[in-house]
Amino acid sequence: MAFDIGTPVNSALLLFILYSVHRIILPSVSRPKTIPHEFRSGYSWLPKTHPPTVLFKTYTPKTLVPFNGVDSERILLAINGTVFDVTAGRNFYGPNGMYGNFAGRDASRGMAKQSFDVEMLTAIDQPLDKLADLQADEIENMKGWMEHFSNKYIICGKLVENDAV
Ligand SMILES: *[C@@H]1O[C@H](CO)[C@@H](O)[C@H](O)[C@H]1NC(C)=O
Image (cartoon, rainbow, N blue to C red; front, side):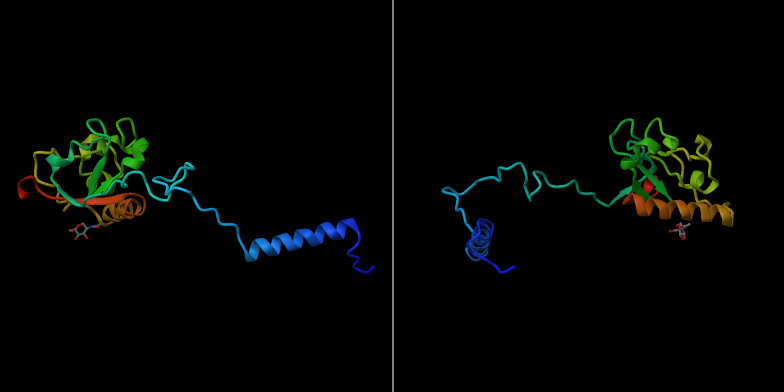
């Protein structure tokens, strides 16, 4: 069938093609009459507030303990001297979580021994747990937890002795 410009369908098609080409060559540009002060359509490429920043800080057992999820929204815990912000895992590390005892504390021994009991914790006025008695498999456990935490949570500081700062 030959292309017949005369049929209504072809005319409509031709008009559409011409219109499309015209739009491609000369895209319509609408210039606002006034310079907008804010982007109005409920969608902005700039965040309204600065995203929260995480400062790398030095904590001691005593300054870490307020971040136990009870006195604070933020939940921190330490493993082998590294402090992690586990706020995002509140269900686990918050007050009613399975690992709630570790919130605001040095969790090293508990992680190593796979025990989440309070007996695993060192009193906050005592020197840091040196973990010298841990067996190779327990050290491996702790390392595994640290790797998991490093992938999942934010490292936000280090834990040092109470009298070190
Ligand atoms: C724990 O920390 C000590 C001192 O920084 C380091 O020598 C050791 O390798 C760490 N252990 C693990 C399991 O990461």
